[in-house]
Image 1 (cartoon, one colour):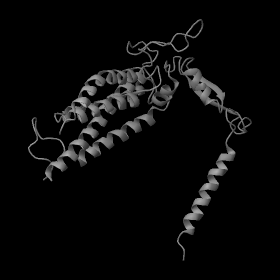
Image 2 (cartoon, chains in turn yellow, red):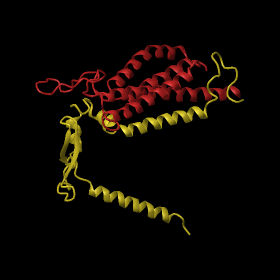
Image 3 (cartoon, each protein chain N blue to C red):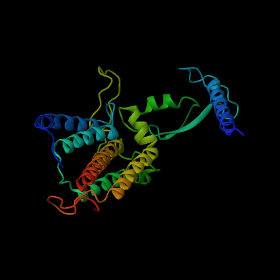
Image 4 (cartoon, rainbow over the protein chains, first blue to last red):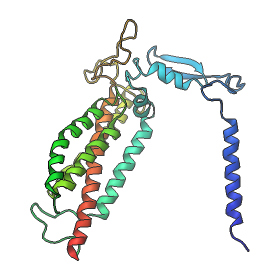
Length: 129
Length: 159
C-alpha cells in the first residue's frame, strides 16, 4: 500500500485551510471591511488611555490607528512606533525573544565549553584530545 | 589561531571604528529611528567577528562576557517587572513621569516643521530595554562566534 496518501490528504487539508483564511481576509488597506457591524462587541473595544487616565472606546479594528496616534504621546513618548509596539505594548513577547537568544548562547557555550583556553596565555592543548 | 594577511588586518583596523560607532548609534537611537537593540547588536557582533577572524585573538574574557550577557537580560526583565510598581507588567513607568531618566516628552506636532524630531532621552523603559537587548546581543553573538571559531581550530590542531 502506498504510504504517501495520508500526507497528501494532510497537505490538501492544510492548503484548504490556508485558502479559506485567505478568502476571509479583508481587503488591502481597508481596516473596517467585514468587521464593521459586529453584533457581539458592537464594533468597539475599550482600551486604557494613559494620556487621559481613563478607558476609551475605539473601533474594533482600529488597533493600528491607536498605535499610530498614541505612540508619541505620554503613553510611551516613543518616536518610532514599531519600537513602541515591540518593546512596550508587546514587551513580554520581546522578553521571550531575549530569553531564546540567552538560552541559545548558553547551549552553544555548554556544548563547546572546551574551546576556550583555561587560563590567560597561549593554549597548550586543544579540546579534550 | 592564525591571523590573516596584512591586507585584511589593515582593512579591519580601518573599518572597526566606524562600524562599531554605527552599531552603537543604531542601539541608542532605537526609539527614534528604524533599528533597535537586536539590529545594532548584530552590527557590533559582526565587527567583533571580523576582528576575531582577522587577528585570531584568543584572549577573550569569557567570564566577563557571560556576566555582561546576564546583566543585559536581567536589566530587561527587571525593567518589565518594575512596571508593576506603577500599574501592570511592562508598564512604561518612566515615560512622561517625574523620574529624570529617559522621561523627556515629544513636543506636540503643532507648528513643527520636521515631524520626526524627538529628544534622545525620551521613551522611558523602551530606551533602557533597547540598550539591555543590545548589550545582550553583542556579547551573546560574539561569544557564539568566538566559541565556534576556537573549537574548530582546536579540532584542526589535534590532527
